[in-house]
Length: 348
Length: 84
Image (cartoon, rainbow over all chains, first blue to last red; front, side, top):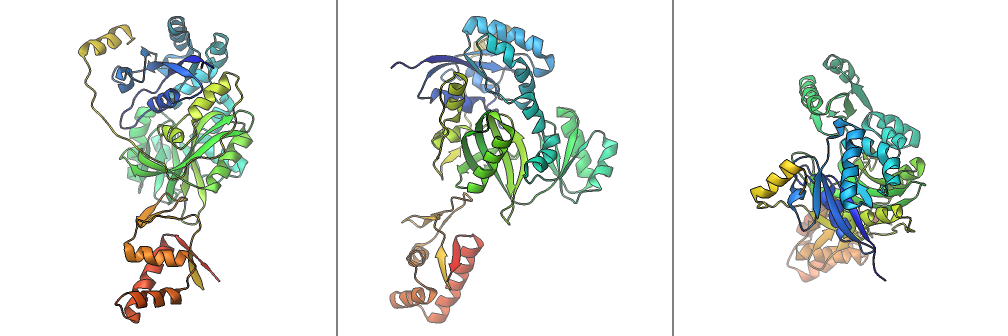
């Protein structure tokens, strides 16, 4: 029987030192056994490496920044859809997700499917709400408070012990060992990602993460726990290994079961020496290391496309423990004509 | 009380040890591997000591000291568990 061929648009082509998940998602789609794909890259900047990786991305279109709003995005997607007849779209950035969630119904009517959390799910798991979220679902979460102005930092920090973690709304984290360092992190992160900034209690331990998918009805369709083995100065995993950890899987199932999470998510935990698991973040998308799930035997990326296409998707019940990913970087040689084309026409 | 290697710990013939719950890996030399295999086979500390004294030129006190250090290391890395 011949396989269907889907045209799938993917964002997050920035395979840089703090990489977007797009290229890993695309590799998962290319590895899919149940369908073939034509990949349409959606880029924000002209130097996102994925634009020029023609063995993985068939064609790329620039899309407007999230700050330009849903209408501008919809206009651009309608244009791309007229050219490419998209079947599915994988948004991969936290900052763009809200717009895509809002457009989900409109795009579905046009035949562009997505598997995303609802607005409520998206908001509830937000860093600024996570402490409350943990309390509601019986999950340990380090205490956190929001700071809206520099004048508030000293007051808020007074109720914490040093060190504290200073976090941006979407990205960036710093550890502060005194008030001055906290203020520095506040200014640096808020200049880039806006307010509020989050002050969170620091938990000592080993960071472990889970990449998982939920079907929107409470079932965990797949989950793979991973520990970072090599971490860059930006805190990103450069190498990692799959773990055999029943506790992590149980907490993941509890989160997805309680919230009826729909789509991909990454759970970030700190495991203490007493084997307590503190949930640090829930990222509402695939992580950049999600290709490890494919390597470990769970092509979660393929599963979600099939779910959206109305096919029956069985939950994965196992994965290979001790499977590693090791990231690498490579210099591509690119002709100026390609750079010129994406810069002037917004397509390549 | 005997010390046993945890069931889920993977120990290869090359002396590579993988702890699947933490993702940590370690390597031991051939003597360490021999001791770990004896532990895995369920031998007590006394039986392991007797085996090593019989097969290697080492006095009992020196072996006990090194074996104790080795056991402390195994406990620290949570590779073993005690059982009656």
